[in-house]
Image (cartoon, rainbow, N blue to C red; front, top):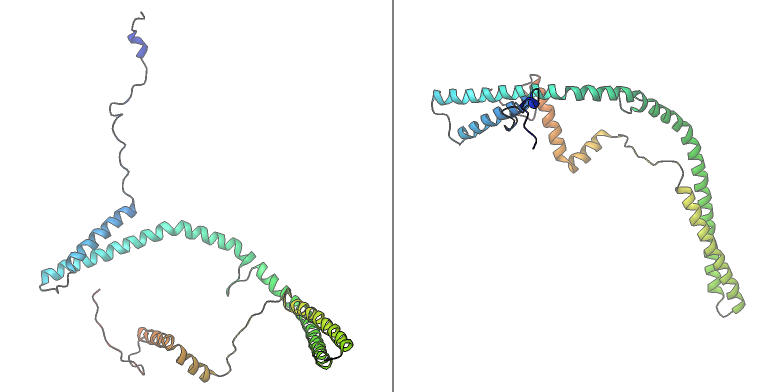
Length: 254
C-alpha cells in the first residue's frame, strides 16, 4: 500500500475558499440607472395624476419637484442617447462620405453613377424615341392594312352567297386577313415592349386658381393642415393678428 506523502502538495494550487460562491453581479449600466429613475418618477406621477386638482402649496411644491425631476431625468436620458449613438452616426457619416461621390442621387449631391447615367440617357433617349416612333408607325400601317383586308374579306363573304367558287375565294381572303391581323399584333408588341424607354408623367401648373379649387374640394383636410401650419409659424414669429384665426394666449406650466 502506497503511503501518503504530505510534501507532495507543497506548491500545489489550492482552490480559493469561496470558489463555490456565485459570480458577483455586474454593475448597472448608465441606461439601466436612468431607465429605473424615469420609471420610478413616472410611477410616482401616476399616483398624483388621479384627477384631483392641486389644493394647497405643499401639494403644488411636491408635484413641481416631481415635474422637475422628470425633466432632469429626461435630459439625462437624451444626453446618454446622443452619446451612445454617436459612434454609429460617425460610422454612417463615413460610409455616406465614401459612397456619395459614386452613387449619391439627391438634391444636394449627384454621384458619378447618377451623373453618368443622366448624360448617357440624353444620348439614348432621342435615338430610342425615334426607333419607337418608327415601330409605332409601322404597327399602325400593318393594323390599317389588316383592318382593310378584313373589310374586303367580309364583303366578299357576303357577296358570295350562292356562288361556291366565289365563296372559296372569299374564304382565302378571310384567311389572309387573319394572318395579317396576327402580323399587326406582333408589330404592335414590338412597338410597345422592349423599347428601352420608361414612361413617366409630370403635372405642369397652368392655372393656379383652378388647381386650388380642385384640390380644395377634393382634399379639404390637407388645405386645413397647411393653413394651420402656416398660422402656427406666424404665431411663433410674433404675429398676433391673422385673418381667419383667433390668436389665443395660453399659459402652460414649465
